[in-house]
Image (cartoon, rainbow, N blue to C red):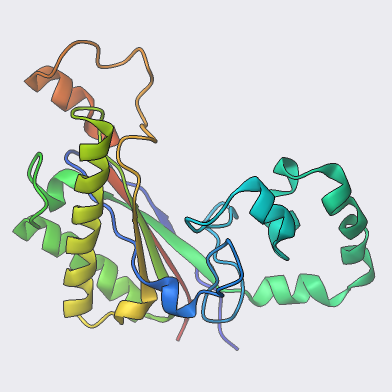
Length: 227
C-alpha cells in the first residue's frame, strides 16, 4: 500500500517567482475548480480548493464541488441539503485517508531571479533541482506553484513579471524530466503580500526593497504518493 507523503518547507528571501502550469489537460471542463488526474479537486496543503479563472460565486453554486470548496460563500439553501449526506456515507473517510497529500515548499525568490528579472540564476536552478528530486521520489499527481511579487511597480507589471517567472520555472522543471502536463503555474503579482500595510514605508529605495523581501516568493505544492 502506498504511504501518503506530506512535508512542509517554507523559505523566503528576495525577488519574485511563480510556478504553476498545465493541469488544464487533466481539468474537467465543466468545473470551476482545478481537477487532478484522479478526477478530484486539487487542494493546497491547508485543504483549500484551487479555483480556475472561470470561478465566480454564481458558478460555484452550480458546480458539484461548490459546497465542498466554498460552502461559506454560497447561499445557505444551496448547500444545506448536502450537509447531512456525508453522515450516510461511511466510505467517505476511508477515501479521504488515501488521497495523496501535498508537499508545500516556499522557494526564496532571490535565489531564482535577480530583482526585476525573469531569467533563472544558477542558484535558482539548484533550488529547483531540489524540488525536482523530491517530485521524482513520488508517484506524481501534480505540481502547483504560485508566484508573488512585492508592491514596487504597477499591478499590471507585477502580474506579468510573476507569470514570466512562473513560465521560466516550468520550462526548467520540464527540462529536468517533470511532465509538462503535471505542472500548473499561476502568477499572483503583488496581490498577496506577506508584509503588513504599515511595513516598508516610503518610495522605492534599497532599504524598502530589502524590507519587501518576504513578498517576493513562490509557493510550490507537490501532490503525490510515495513509491
